[in-house]
View 1 (cartoon, one colour):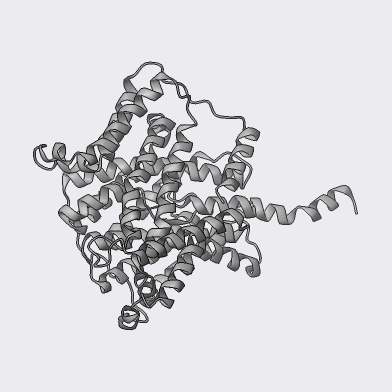
View 2 (cartoon, rainbow, N blue to C red):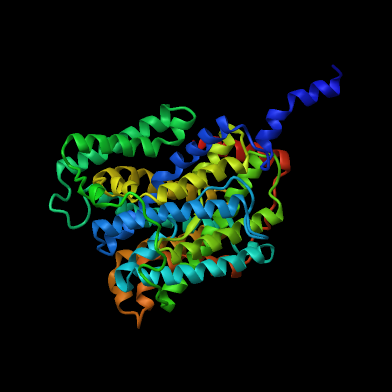
Length: 462
């Protein structure tokens, strides 16, 4: 055997791993696809459960919201992996319901109803398609200090939501009871232990392990009512426009602003996949197509009654760990998500989960969002200019929600945008970063340095 033949015989498996268009054997591809779904499942169903509580949804409506979240995530994943013309990165990107929109969506839903949130999401999605098309020209608007501040504030804003759920849910008769708090603490401890001492898939699915463990304990304690499962249908096709669409300028402004930040997160996830998994920089077509697919998925989600979708970072870590960058593996996962979304009884099982179980995991999930924001901020030099931007934005983002009286004095619906604090904080960060002198130019690392850095970062997240 010649050296060339020997080399060729040794490279196919690595070629399959690093080539997004290669297809591993089905015996490996199917388990890998299931693994991707298990890693994102908890994050995908949590936002619809939270929004259901805000709008006072019935158990049947909650099951429906979980069902459509699964169905839409599957369709959105296929848009990314298979693509439609210029839309879609054609990379192994798993899409799911975004936590990023919750801080703005929750007050909007409580004030205007879910239809206004969905209408604003539809518009925001269409604008994100435009963002993807003109990505190269406007990317410089969103420096690490701006993006990091917004992501950090998203996590901080959601932390009280997680703690309210840990106590049993606002309005619960047994709110903050020892049973609820103990159950939430159990989920939190299990999640931490599995994340720290687990390996591979087990480590990546630590949130899911915590949720399942807490669910089983709550069943043993007699805290679960399975009547919703019995009343749910075995098979049902999700109905579009179940809640309708309403368009309020306040809601559109808020959702659009967060859409820009989430779009930047998608760019980061795509870059991490190509650098850490495929060993190269992301192509312009992959970045542009991925962001446009995010927008299409968000508008599609609005039509099918669920919150905006985005690329899931936890799956990026799985790709870096396994080294398998085949988009067809994730396509299999997307098909499985669609199938799961067609069986409402599965949604019934999730809807029956006590709030305290979800709250225990929420403490970790929302805290990790804030941690991710801190990590993004670290990418920039923390000089006096950056510290000033952070100081002003954080004061507005944390202070305004704590002083409701200020928002109540604002005319019309302007006060609603101030209640979350996130919108004025993001606007302040964008404006100050644009007008203050001394904005640093973004220097891209050398390819080999970027590969090593992103690979280590993704592995550390698992």
